[in-house]
Image (tube, rainbow, N blue to C red):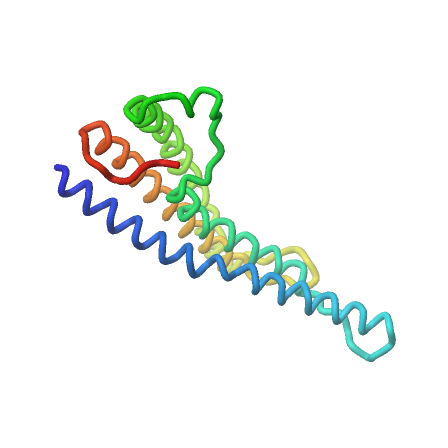
Length: 179
């Protein structure tokens, strides 16, 4: 059983680490989109004959959603979540693993419900001829919904990995310290 848990942890952590490291450069994509938006608006105001781009704000929002959702599993893996150190910081490693194993179960339930709703929303987008945004640009919404479903699924895999790490810690396995 230990071997199977360790393989799962290794596979999921490796995949989410790689995805997180790639996605973290999405900040530059967002900066580029917003910089383009600024240039086109200023250029239009100064009379340079540049029409302001209608797509930039919504595209920046889509890029931010992708950045946030796909970076979530990497953040969970690094232990970047907020904890109440008033109590947690003084606990033994065993007590931390017990509490983390219990609390991550709530996260897993939440992510399963979120994934279910995201899947329903994604299929709705496809069923009705391609759901579109109500803005002037009117982009299809299925690409961002697909990214959200994939990101939530990856977060679920990472939450299960964290649960397995806590179980392994309770079994005496050294799987690295939580921050």
